[in-house]
Amino acid sequence: MRRSINTALVCGLFLLPHLPAAAQSTPNPAMTAPDQVAWQLFIQANTRAGGSNSTFETWASDSDTFKPTPQFPTGATPPALRRPILPALAREGVQQSGGLLPALPPGIAQGATEETRHNKATFDFIVQNNLYKVSGLKAAFGKNLQFPIDSMEVKANWMAVSDIPAFTNNRVTLAQVPQLYHVNSSGGVQYAMVAMHVISKLVPNWTWATFEHKLNPARCDILGCKDAFGAQTAFVASNPVAGQGYPDCTKTQALTAMLANADIDPVYSNYCLKGSQTDFVDNVGLDIRVGNSVTEDTFVATASCMTCHGRAVFDKTGKPTSVAGFLSFTANGPIGPIGPLLPAWYWTFNSQPPIFEGKPGLSQLTTSADFVWSVPLCAIDDTQNPIPASNCAGK
Ligand code: HEC
Image (cartoon, rainbow, N blue to C red):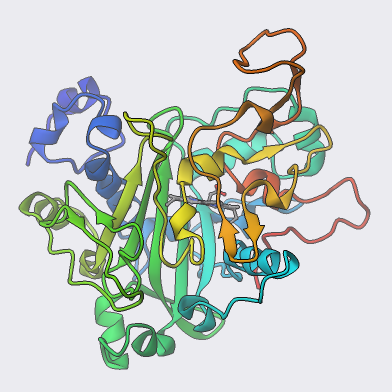
């Protein structure tokens, strides 16, 4: 498991200190071994950072970032919790489309909350380019925004520890929760982490991966669970009935070794990779789907990390084009965008496809925030006085 600095550099893995030796000679691991890189990044985000804190808890939350004077924290901070934005919008949208307000899905009914964290590279890019405020987005309209390659972001979902036994259909007792979950407290309440998205800029369109606690009752529902690196069973099919739970994602020797060599709390071995995504469509034209049973609750069947994040754009007024830019609503439920990015999301044009750079009649409608949704969604509107709270403020 020893590595030499030279090998790591040759392979472009300077961000990935814990990869086993064999993996280091893999060319382009983010594309050719995405599940392995997903675990590496998960370990990087969750490496111990003093006390019971993990590295991602030292990164800037949306509340640290999207405010008049953004500030990177000087140490670990408690979870910056808020209501989950996406599932809430999804429910409201379905109701407005004439559907019955869907019953609260179990995770949310039991108080799942979320937070987003940006590492220093990401935070600096947002601040230096004024992407935390609408005036800055107006000024950035038409630019080609590219986050630096050492960018990492996570979105974590938390649930009150006291709610975990019911959430897991009593597969765990209250006393067992701190032994099996990463736990932290916020506002005097103990929360357990149930889900985590991890993205990195190791490739131009980011690496995409999502993790779930092994006891999440809907973990592999609808899409199944896929982990070609870390799970002894690389593909677990969905149960026919939702919310019944799945067997543990028993770890391979390679992942067990990777975790053992890392400076990481052993509770993290109770999390499973649900799936990773490297492209919009596969090599036979089919749309690729990946979604988390907690974070993308209610629209897992039409979840594509990359397609929906490709819709993270703003127009010349510095605003996201519409909230429905990422979800459309039917009376039967919300639908997320999947498949390739469409030119109409970014351009107006007066001709039939193909649409390509420089085609006559093409005019820019929106600017891409390089897949980072919080930029258009959370930017504070400093063109108003007083400045209203960010859409992504804590609860
Ligand atoms: C239907 C749209 C949609 C899908 C599908 C989706 N996301 Fe997001 N994501 C969002 C929006 C909107 C935000 C910002 C608001 C929030 O945090 O909820 C976000 C936030 C994030 C963040 C925080 C950084 C940022 O962009 O602001 C990460 C990391 C993230 N998502 C990863 C993922 C991963 C990994 C997947 C796939 C497993 C995924 N997302 C699927 C819409 C989506």
